[in-house]
Length: 89
Image (cartoon, rainbow, N blue to C red; front, side):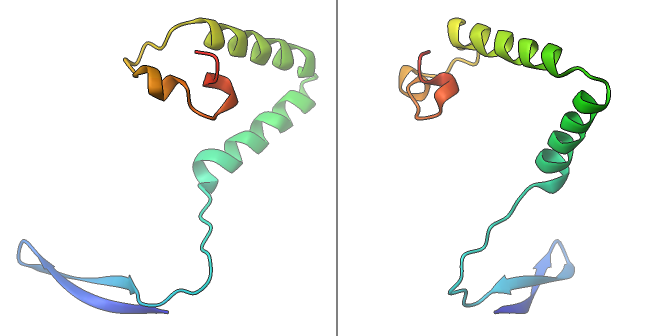
């Protein structure tokens, strides 16, 4: 259940929704930043007959990412995460 609450911030009053009680699970999906670009990429690969080039580029990127050390300065424990791409850093 969502209720509204007034919050004063630098002299302005804003109405902010507040989640009071939620027995169910809320699943949020970033449609604009994840789903739409993925579907658009799949469509363009199919439309332009670039499946083979797309697969080769993805495989080459994955292999280079697995071989190269982390450039972000991440610690060794962050490198050993459960995500398959970084499991062999």
